[in-house]
Image 1: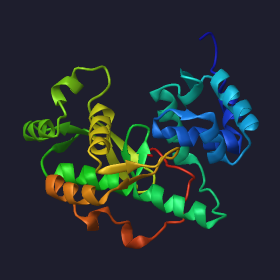
Image 2 (image 1 turned 90 degrees about the vertical axis):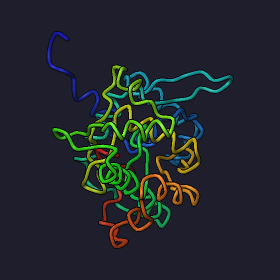
Image 3 (image 1 turned 180 degrees about the vertical axis):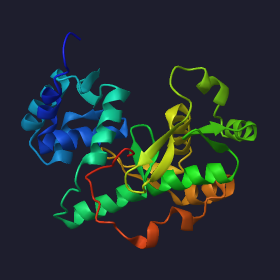
Image 4 (image 1 turned 45 degrees about the vertical axis):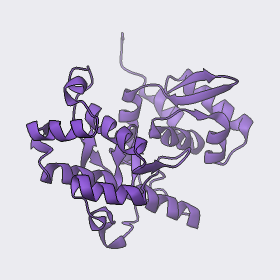
Length: 250
């Protein structure tokens, strides 16, 4: 880089509601088709394709061929991190429909923050991991305890292997709706993936929303001493904070 970064170029890409919706949708960390993103943004397929081309050319999205389909994802973890920080700064999205209001409540209950669990479910699970001795706070982050490593192993999560990878093992990620931290990093991603694999969490297609299943409620109580009350939103209040999606956090 020979001069200052062209921040305005990124700002131009973000300064469109359709493109913003596409980016927020892809914060679920998955691969999504152009048609699904068009439906999510409420625009025609050709218009969505034009926006996807701009986001891809601008380096924010990557596209992968899958058979006859082209599937889109965020281009990197850095893009996801940058979006989460911007979400912290953004004003609440004005709620204009019951569907949008319900989506906002669902996002506050549980959502994917790129590849790890966020929302009330994410914060409550992190609190349970600390209270249960799996993790302990350490210099503004989390450290896996010796007993915690054994407990994670029982869930088929190898902490030692995760720690050997370039990605940080743990990271305290500030949750936009809970105003508290949830577990991110390689361990947060591995744990979320395992909970999804076991059917304890269920992800909504083309959305960041993640719900705890009935089986999951029983399993979370058994394995983490996480009660249904701990998963409930504070007094059911909405906080009038329905960002179409999350805040650094997720």
